[in-house]
Image (cartoon, rainbow, N blue to C red; front, top):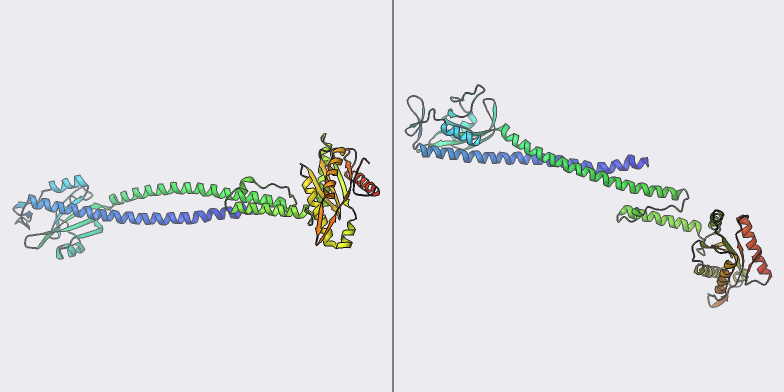
Length: 426
């Protein structure tokens, strides 16, 4: 039992959990990567659209090219943009996105503030951004911008004048901690759902594994009893009713028990109970009758002139006669706790539970009549069979050996009277 619980139980749990946990880790990593990638793509698209919208708003509100006046203030057409924070501040308030208007390489208007809560106007952008946007006139998205000590997702769009020259750029950006916060919250939700699924899977796998182990334990207990000689052990009904391999194993174990029981309890030629089983059943009945008001009787008999069958026709003919007589007994011995036993050679013992000597005598005469009318064919010959039987009822003050001796005495009296009869009363 310990070996099953110590190895198979945990092996089954590990076989379930290792791939399950491994799959969960892989899926969590994959989901995290996909979520982050998807969120970054969404942020990039949103920032680009917002940047285009801001540029179009400036074009509508202030027609003309970007430039710089004599005082060093950036202008748009005839309008000085210096100090005009209302548009970009409104965008930040509505969207949470930082906005900077950059002329050449310098931030002229910005919503980004430093730790002292001052706008960082007058600062310059990195060479990488200048290379892509100002020199090449391309849009540029960065996943790893650092501005005033904060990490940003940033999108840069070139500000193109009517002559095609790039005068500067518009920056729109989102702090990474905000985006990562959303990603982490979503991952947390996935993790919670995953843990709930794992808990349910754990409960299911543990219950299912226990069910399997319990079934194996029951089968092992059954086999242990059979192995120690208890051929009356009962297999669990639920186990043999299972429609899986364990149920099949349980049914096979039951078949093994039945085969062993037949091999040990039955006579190989006639399939009747053998003498060892017969003596055991007589002892059981003796104990049962002594503890109750019940009674039982026996009939001990042998086949008349059996040696003649073997001498005249051979031992195979004798075997056929024994089998036919056994079949006749089985046709008549059909009641509860009635047994037909091959006592030895051509000798048989019948047990009649609940019948006194008189009733057992009448029942035995019926059996003898059937044997007398039975025809046994061997080859091209037909032989007749008779028996002589002695009947005795169990007495509570005697032993089983004494009971069998009284039946045997009646049998010999019957032989002395000419055989082919039933004798009782001794």
